[in-house]
Picture (cartoon, one colour):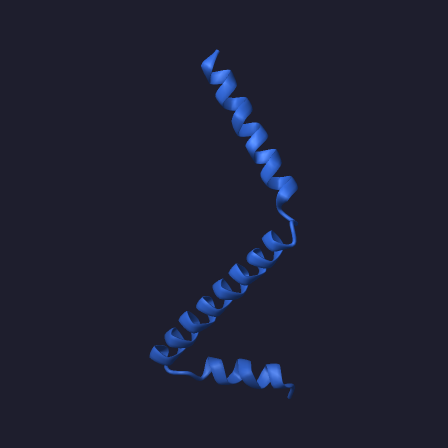
Amino acid sequence: MSQLEQIETAILSLPSHDFEKLRQWFLNLDYELWDEQIERDIADGKLEALAAEALAKFTESINEFEL
């Protein structure tokens, strides 16, 4: 049995209260890792083109509204 299979088996055998605590811990970890990745992408300039496109579309929609 692989380590992953052992972990899966252990998780499935947890009492519901412990399973809920593990689930919350894992979700929080996932959110933290995602936030760290976004911060790295921002620092590396990977979102510049997307931000520029969003601002251009926003400005365009404001200009259309003012007409």
